Amino acid sequence: SVRCKNESPFKTTIAHGFLTASLMPKAFAEVIEDSPRIASTINYGIDKLRFLEPVRCNDGVKFQFTVVGIDDKPMGALYKVEATAQLKSCEKPALIGTFLMLAVLK
Image (cartoon, rainbow, N blue to C red; front, side, top):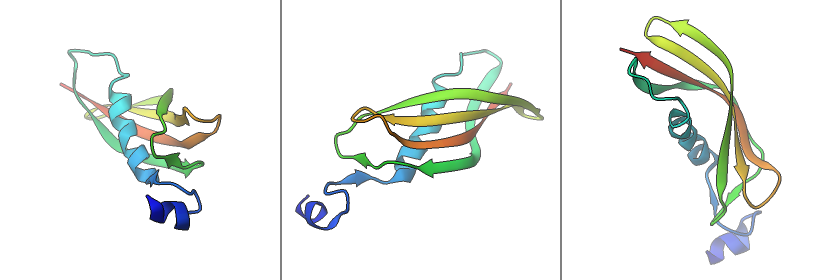
């Protein structure tokens, strides 16, 4: 918009960082292999989150995940996942963080 072009330090419309972060649990849930033992996968929280670069309007984001730990919990398996939201327009990631996802067992 004209207002963003004139007033924003980024000179364009950007997505809120937490919007990008909120998409990560859904993307991670698609990475876990389907198993008849898993009833659902739920967001358990964030240990660490850093916003490094804005997601500009019409830019693409690719998520990358590395499982760094799996702990047994009474309800299932708690995955500790280092995640990156990589921008398609540049080498810098939009955000990096450590997310927690609980695979609830049946």
